[in-house]
Structure formats: C-alpha cells, structure tokens
Image 1: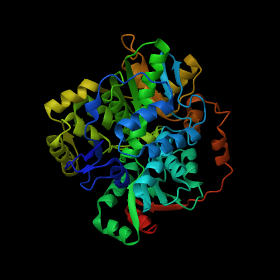
Image 2 (image 1 turned 90 degrees about the vertical axis):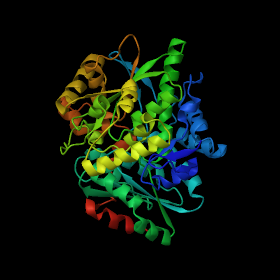
Image 3 (image 1 turned 30 degrees about the vertical axis):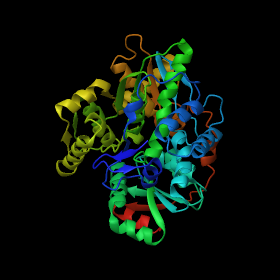
Amino acid sequence: MTFVSTRKGLEASSAESIFRGLAPDGGLYVPASIGAKAGEAPDMPATLRACEEWCLARLFDDLPADVRAAAVDRLCDRFPAEDPVPLVEKDGLRVLELFHGRTGAFKDVALSMLPVFMRHAAAGRRVLVLTATSGDTGSAAMHGFAGVEGTEIVVFYPASGTSRIQRLQMTTPSEPNVHAVGIRGNFDDAQSAVKRIFADPAINAEAAAKGVTLSSANSINIGRLVPQIAYYVLAGAKLAEESGRRTVFDVVVPSGNFGNILAAYYAKLLGSPIRRLVVASNVNDVLARFVKTGVYDPGPKFTVTNSPSMDIRKSSNVERLLWAVNGCDASACAETARLMSDLDAKGRYELSDKAKQALFADFEGGVATPEETEAEMRRMRDSAGYLLDPHTAVATCVARKLGYPKSDVPCVVAATATPYKFPETCMRAYGEDVLTSPPPAFAELERLPVAQKAVCDAGGIDDAVRALF
C-alpha cells in the first residue's frame, strides 16, 4: 500500500509514514487506495489476532511479514485472555469492550503494536516520540514504548482536567525512556504545539544534529490508526459467528480526536458490513455538529466535562475524512489544503455540497451533556447491571436519543475505557463506591511514587522537547 499526504499528495511507504508521523506538508498520511479492495470482507475467525493480521496484510502489505507478525504477537502477549475484546449485549445494544489492556483504554491495542512498527521504520535511528493527550493516549503510549530500545517518548497532558487515575498512569512510570509533562492548558493547546514542532525546520534540524528524529504516537500517526480498524472488522466477524451469516450493523463511537470512528469508517471501506457511523459527542460538540451540517466550527467555547478524553475542539483525524469525502485524488488534496487553511485563517470551514452528500451518506451525530451522561450511567446500571465509564455512557445515551438499534440492525457501541479510570465521576453518578474490584494495574498505582513531576505553560513545550535531544 502506498500512502499519500492529505494536502499535497506526497507519496510514502508504510514504514516512512509511520516513522514521520506527520507528513512534510503538514498534512496526514492516508492509504492511497483503501477503497480499491472494497467489497465483502471475507469470513474469518472472530479473534483479535485474525482480524489484525487481515487488516495489516491489506494496509501495511509492504512491511515485512515478520514485522507484522511480531507486532501481532506483542499485542497478543499483552492481551492474553481468550477473548480480549468481548462483544456483550446490554439493554438492547451490543457493547464492544475495548478496555481490557493494562491502562484500561482502547488505545492499548494499537500502542502495543506501534513500537514494533516504529523500531522497524527507524532502522537503527534514535526516535523521540511526541504525544499530546487528553487523558488516555498518554498512558497507553508510555506503557507501549517503555523500555523499547532506540526510542524515547514524551507525553504532554492537561495538568488539570484529567481524572486522578489518568494522571497517576502518566506520572508514576519510571522507565528512563518515558517522560510526562503537565501543561497549563488543554489538549488542543498540546496538540497544536506538537504539530507545530513537527513542522518547524529549526527544531527538526536541532534534533537531527543530535541524531534524533521526531515522530508521534497520536492517531495522527497512521501506525496508531491502522490497528484500530481491526476492532470493527472483529465486531462484524463476531456478529456473523453468532448469527451464522454476514450481518449488517451500525456503530456508535464516543469521539474526541476522531481516530476511533475513522477506523470504523476505514473498516467499512475495506468491506466490513457497517451501515451507519454515529459520532457521539459531549458538550464540546464540534464533531457532532460537523457531521450534521458539513460545517466545522470549533467556536470559542471550551468546557471541561466528566468525559475528559473527549474535551477536544480541533480533531486532527477529521483531515483524513476531508480527503476521503472530497474524492481521494489530487483535487481532494487541493480542497483539503484549502479547508485547513480556512480553519487557520477564519477559525472554521464548510464542505462543498458534493462533499456534504458523501459525509451525510455515512455519518450522523448526537450530544450528551454531563448531566445526561451521569444519568445514563445510572440507567444502564439499573436496567442491565452494567457499569459504564462516562465516555461510553455518552455513546449509549446518544444511541438511545437517535433511536438505535433501528430496523432490527444490531447497534455496536465502542466502550472505550473502563469505569475504573474515572472513580470521581462514578462516585458522583452512582452515589456510592461501586468500583470494588480494581484491575491489579490500577490498584498498584496507589502505591507507586510519582516519578514525572514536570509542568509547563503551553508556550514552554518547545523547550521541554529540546531538553530531550
């Protein structure tokens, strides 16, 4: 598979795309022909291993087979359960549990595999991985890269606005190649700074002079995104196994940086029988408004909510969708570049009528307020005896509001985190301590000393990066 950048169509191999993270033109790498092999995804065992192997063989086919195999083996070693991604039925919805990794978030799967891809792509070069996080990516990335030879990772997270458990997951790791820096700002501030650093020739020249190359573990890196496609291929395989036939289904994803639902969209393009893709937003509802109107307008308002990993107004992966709905060709690059320029200059952009039609054909969206989120957590416990984290509760609330499941079509909700990551919200929602059996890795956090104590203003991120050259 050849990858191209979204703004100028610059071509790159899988390894180069992974190694760079962000394309030289400031855009993101996308598969040049993801739709070329579309059609019905073949029958396959309903296992995470099989689905990952299938996805990697289609999108990272130019990576050596032994590298792909090593990445899948590392994943399965870290997810040893017989069924590491269960699909459970709760209150009429099918909940795809993506949180059974060490840090309790859906990022754990991809970030178990990315270090293998990165080491191969680096070919012996030293890599400094820069990562902005709203709460979950940071800990999963630190865990994934801890101790990986030839790599160093620094995570920038909001010093306030994350849960206590999320902060502990980022501040207690003590491996010498992992670093976390709290910023006095929000995720958008961190992500903007990291993307600007990637595009800054002076900083990159300083890094190169010291034998360092900068890369990313955010979903702007295609090596992070591709493994997530397997979640939705797996959901289709599980539904087919249950029913004995290929089963069309809808997907609802709590969305922040748009990577997880974009992975579901790519699964559909590869032939997974997904009908509708539903963006579930909290009151930072930029994405829900975008898929309803075709207008991307972050606006001035930012709200800290009880679903902090979705407290994002500028979602990087939307750029990949812009390229897709504008035709996946040279003209799509020109239009994507224009739209991103409008976002920088005007603070908003609007799709063409043709692109809107393509967007509306696949996507819709809805919003849950913090109050609705906690009410949904209580409702699901009362009706199904099931505990939701606040992000997944946003998704199930939006599903109910929009009338899913519809027409006897199963509705799969992506459960993106364990409730044990958000004890404060759970205590408030349930009025009692219901988190009585924490996973061992979570219980251990309370006993570990804080090793990562750095805090800086958003404007100090450049210096924090330079200090690691």
